[in-house]
Image (tube, rainbow, N blue to C red):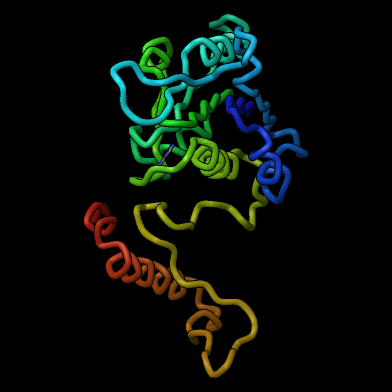
Length: 230
Ligand code: ADE
C-alpha cells in the first residue's frame, strides 16, 4: 500500500510514522508513506496557501490552486495511478472500523489535510473525495485525524501485525467491545485472574469471553449494543 499525505505541516508526521507499528510496516515494505507539502505547489512569490473568505467572516480559507496542483503532481496527471482520495474535515462521515477495513484494501490512499477555517468549496468539486471526520469536535487541522486514519488502516494491512496480535478478536469486530484481558501475575494487590481463564477449558473460556464482551458493550456503549446482530 502507498499512502500519500498532503499537508502544510509534514513535520508533524515524522514522530508518528517513525515509531512502532507504522515504522515496522514501512521497514517490511508493506506500506510506503509519501509526504507532500502543499505550500510547495503555490505559484505566487509569497507561497500563499490561504485567503480571506468571500462574503466576510472569521478565519482563512485554503485556496484551490496549490491543493489542485499538489494532487495532480502526486497522481502525475491521472487515471492509471489514481488513488482513493480522503479529505479530513469535521464535515465528513464519522470514521468507523468498517471504513478502516475498506480503506485497508486499497493499493493507494491519498489523505488531504486542511488547516485554517476550511477548504475552498471548489477543492471538493474537482475530485472524488471520501470526506472523513474522526469525531464531532473541531481540531486545528486535518493532520492528527490523518494520523488516526493511517494508524487504523495500516495495522489491518496483511503482514503488518504478527499472527499473535491479529485484529480478529478486538473491539468492534461483531459490533462488540473486547472482552477483559489478564496477564501475569495471577494475583495482583489482592485482585485475582478469573479461575475460568486458567481452567484450560477452551470452550468455556470462549463462552465467558463472549458474555463479557456483551456485558461490557451493554454497560459502556449501549449505542453500539443496540446495533449488534442477534
Ligand atoms: N479537521 C478538523 N477537525 C477535524 C475532525 N474532527 N475530523 C477530521 N478532520 C478535522
